[in-house]
Length: 411
Image 1 (spheres, helix red, strand yellow):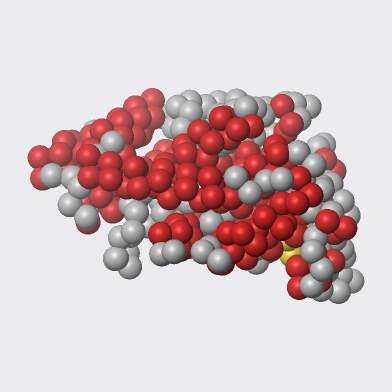
Image 2: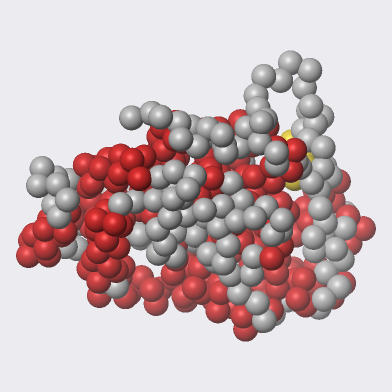
C-alpha cells in the first residue's frame, strides 16, 4: 500500500513554505562536501547530542526494573521513528523530517517519566509561576541548552530547522483527536503555552503525533504483562478489545500493524491523518485500559512518592544557595557533603552564564569554550537561578538523580 496521497503537501522543496520550514535561527556552519538534507542534518545533530544519549537511562513507564527487555525512553523514541517513517513512506511525506522529529520528540522528558514531569511542574508553578511540560522543555533543550562542537571545537547551540523544532513542541499524544490537520504556519511556536494547544505546522509532525500514541500503548502492555501487572482476567478483557476488528490478533505487534495500515487507508489531505472510526474507538479503549490497569496501578505508588522525594530534595539543596553574585562562593559550603552534585551543577551553570561571573580556573576555561546563548546571564535574579536548577534536573537520567540524592543521604 503506497499511493503517496500526501506527496503534493509534503515538506519538500516544492512546498511554498519550504524556506520557513528549513529555516534556522542562526546559520549552521557548512561543509563543502555536505550530502545531507537540512532535516537529515537535524537528525544527526540530535543523535549525537548528550540529551538524546541520556534517554537510554530514562524510564518509559516502569522504574528501576532489573530486566534488559523493559522499554526505556530511548527505545520508545525508536518505536515512534519506525511507525512514523512507515507512515511517511506510504503516504508520500518527507521521511527525513519524520525521523528527525521522532528522534527528538521526547528529548525534554524529566527523570522518572511523567511522574518526574509532575514534580518539576509543581516546583515551576510554585517558584516561577509557570508550567513545566516536556514538549516545551524539549524545545528549550534543542534551542537553548543542548550544545555540540563545531568544526573548530567550539560548543554551539543545535540550531535546528523550524519544522523539527515545531514537531517537537507539538507532538503531545495525550489529546484524543481523529483526523489531524496541520495548523496554519502563521501561528508561531511562541504561542504554545500548554501541551496539545496546536497541531504541528507540517503533515509530518501530525504523523509523528499519531505514531507516538500507537507506539506507547502497545509496548506498555507488553511490559506490563511481562512484569505481572496485568492479571489473566484482565488480559482476556484486553484480548476482546484487541480482536474487535480482527479475530486473528494475538499480540500488540499485530495491533500496531493493523493501525498503521488503517491510517494509510483512511488518511488523505481532505480527511487528515486519520484512523477509521472502528480503529479510533479501539485505540481509545486500549488507552483507557492502560490507564486503569497500568499507569494507575497500586504497585507504582511507592515509586511516585520516592520520585517526588528525590527531585524535591535535589531542588531544595540547590535553591537555598542563591545569593546573587555570591552564589558561586556559597557552593563551597555544600561541596563538603555533596561534591558530585555541586560540581556537576556549577559546570552546568558555567556554560550558560556570562563568563565574567564564572570563577577562574577549569570552570572559566570550560565556559570560554562555549559560544552559545547565555540564558542565565549574570544570575541577576532568583528566577534565573531557579530556572537553571529546573533545567539541570530535567536533563538528569533516573540513575543520576538517584545518585545525587543518595549522596545527600551519605553525609
